[in-house]
Length: 295
Image 1 (cartoon, rainbow, N blue to C red):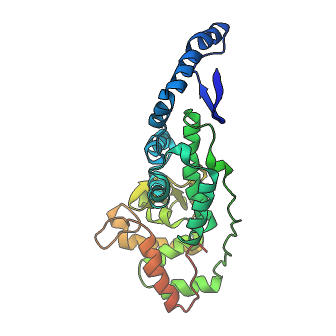
Image 2 (cartoon, one colour; image 1 turned 120 degrees about the vertical axis):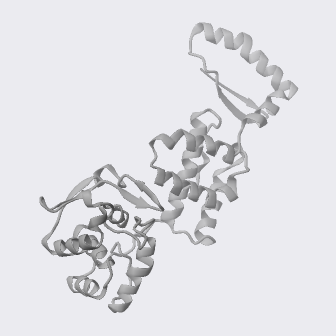
Image 3 (cartoon, rainbow, N blue to C red; image 1 turned 30 degrees about the horizontal axis):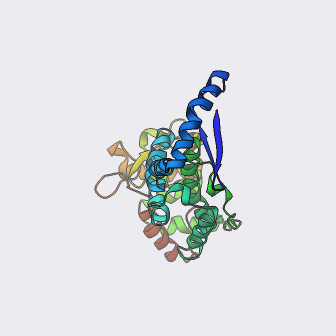
């Protein structure tokens, strides 16, 4: 059963946590409603309301805890980082019931205009805030979710993809003289994500069957499962890739660990340095216009 009432033109709605039975209706009429009337008249009801409505920061801790069981550690870290950077400064100390759709809309515009985030990035941050408010609604703390009523974000226009031509691929592989030539070759001839490549171990490569099994990914120092369930997959080793794998085996194969190792014989913490240094330098030396490795 739910109890709905108005006080000074403001609507209140609360769950009684009771099944809708004849006996419970009688109990609500004879006990709960008189007590509520007393608390309204004395002002106690509003004091309790102030105490029980948490701030966004207080309830965010609960919300993150609710979902941590089914979120990957890498996702949790990414979401926590976005939350602390883009949500905490604006809403953390504000009571949840004081945040209106107009506040959300203004915040979105600030992220777009001042923080220079793309509509896609703002949508990702907004999703985090939306889940927090949805959890508050489900816990009967709020009647509605203001994020759902906020203005829509501008339509995201995907960046144009310009795949590398065969000639460019050959030029890149001829130009790069380090082990990263083999790294780039794996990317070109398998389509693996960069995090999956640095997470690749020699046990994942079967030269006899000519296959590569994708079992893990590395990002920001964390070894985790691939991005999605469908990302667990077996890839055929195409003939053009075989020489590069054999060359890399000469470099790290005796370590019987990760395919790509640092000078200290450790797995790479992240693929950012490879992208930012080896990839950019190789494109410059090959005189190929820069575009990200994902192209």
